[in-house]
Amino acid sequence: MLQTSEIKQRFTTIVRTIGDAERACDAATDSPPQLRAYLHKMADEARAADAIIRGSEQARIIECIDRLEDMGDEARRMSRSDEHISTQLETAVSKVHAELSQLKHQLH
Image (cartoon, rainbow, N blue to C red):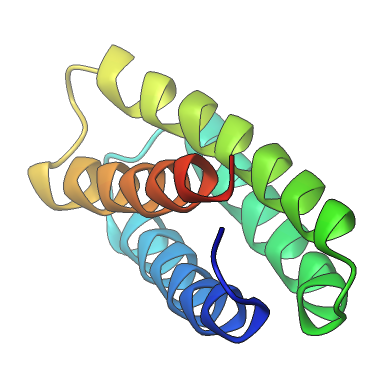
């Protein structure tokens, strides 16, 4: 099991990665509106989860990461189902998914 300090550090990286994907989606002229809205929702969820992550209750931290990882799955599915999406945006979304998935698996 990861130490709380390492989880917090990894979550900071995840928040930054979600922000990068959100900005890539906003900058892409061909990004699907539903993916754009979903990435904004993920960013909002990550900001809300930040207070919980900064706390020390392990069960709530895991719950937040699990919820965000589920959202990462959905964002990746959306990006892969649109054949007109830019490579840069698909890469950014895949990176978000990978970061969240890796942390989730290390917590379980």
